[in-house]
Image 1 (spheres, each protein chain N blue to C red):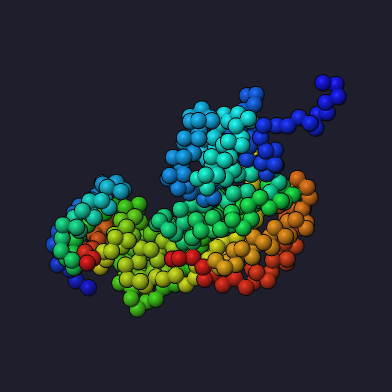
Image 2 (image 1 turned 60 degrees about the vertical axis):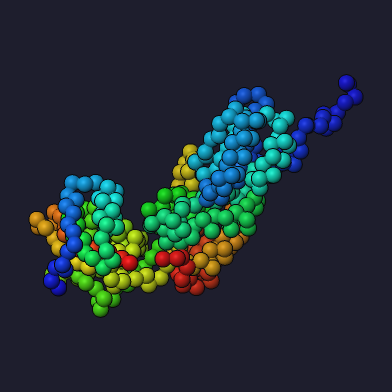
Amino acid sequence: MEAPETAGRLDLRGTPCPMNFVKTKLALEEMGPGEVLEVILDEGEPMRNVPRAVKEEGHRVVRVEPLDGGAAFSLFIRRGE
Amino acid sequence: MADRFIEDVKPKFNIAELKAGGFIKQRQKDLFTIRLRCPGGRIDANVLAAIGEIANKYGRGMIHTSVRQSIEIPYVNIDDFDAVVAELDKVGMKVASCGPRVRVPIACGGCEYNPNGLTDTVYFADEVDKRYFGRPCHHKFKMSFSGCPIDCVRARQADLGFQGMMEPVWDPEPCIACTLCAQACREGAIVAGEDRRPIYDPTKCINCGDCVRVCPSEAWTAKRVGHTVRVGGKHGRHPLESIEVAEFVGDEQVFDVIEKTLEWYNANGRKGERIGATLRRVGVDNYKQFMRDIFDGSTGDGGQA
């Protein structure tokens, strides 16, 4: 699957939980339904928490790509209705 | 004075109130701490405000929260017991218990609003309190309801503890190979393969449900949800870790487990002996044999995953 066309990009490496989620949520709320936001997160706790919280808020992760050999991840999130 | 018998001394309060306990003597003369009945530690905010007023009026303007989620009003004079009980009753608050009987159950937030909760612990704490509170036993009997394996309310150290669990199942069809499940799993039970799809090792899985919660495409779903049952734990001078006796007990079987466990304890225990000591003296197999109809019939279709 090709990387989807994105409407925005947020590099949250070094941003701790739950600020990384809050910034992701605010960015998604600025976008239109169906648009895709790319978020870059550190591996570990951010990757355990943010994808799950985003799902609970009604958005959908459509693609995940490792960066720097797995030290971080690029998350493509489609905004919910 | 000489012909006055001690039995004639009438206290200024209803002594029957004291029998079930909940009035704990302080080191100060005539002063007691009154422990309230708050199953699962959940209290209506208006009731809490009323308790505050009572603490101001009869206590010393402070409350204490007990380790088992109860509110306590310290510094109440023995002469004010009736008045305090009457004022508490007006807002529907009851006094808790002490001594050899079933205590108020404790619970975490459960599946209602806690993101990790798998079972409706709040419902069970409330309902179990209604059905079993104060029932006499050989010693104190404490129950605990944790909604997930994190076990915040220490179901592992209760006389009878219930803990939510979810068995996950993976469907290859909707999987988008995102690897989020492998990253969410803290137990190493899911690792991403070469094709980025999950490889699941059920022997490492503790049934927390993190994979199901994170999965963006519903490839991971709940096969079954239920309660792990553990018996015979305690705190105190000689703490005991409980013994796991059943998995995936369904919601509708929780009350059967409690009823039957109390029956076994009352039949096999000795006065002043916690169920943990009874289990270790009589044998866990004896208990399991007694419980087999319930445990064997466990379907694990409870919870609200």
